[in-house]
Amino acid sequence: GLDRSFADQLASLGSSSLYVSKFPWVITDDWWKYRNRKDFDPSLVDALREQATLATAVAPSFARHGSVSLLGQSLSRVRIVGTTADYPTVAGVELTAGRFLSDADSENRKAVVVIGADVAEGLFPQADPLGTTIRIRGVPFLVVGTLARQGALFGQSQDLLAIIPFK
Image (tube, rainbow, N blue to C red; front, top):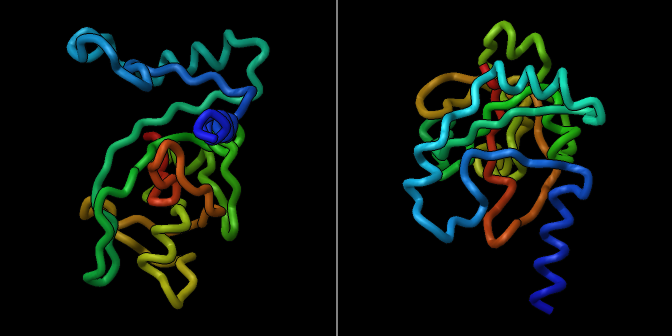
């Protein structure tokens, strides 16, 4: 049963997706070895997009945890992901309302956000979040979309999420 659960959770990542990261998903050796690797920068993403002839989409993602709040109500340990318009194709996320981030949002550094189901339910139990301004780590962002529930992966909620433009 454990093997099947693990296989199912791994399959939810997408069988046709390739993830490139500075850190391995599970660190079994010296953490410092990985910490000292060079960071990715936007030029590497652009180079990958141009040279990966079989890739249908390339989406960088930079994640941190922080608080998300609305009118004195706050959620902590929300995964805040900076990414691009190609993220839904790569990560397999679906919208329930509104829209996803656009290339123009990133290029113009717009303060817009797409929120996961747990954030939507936590901050908007009785209201539609679209068009509302929330604060992410104290900075105001306009909610433009909400994501379908994704469930948990390796015991971690995939719905306590806020997605903002990469730039």
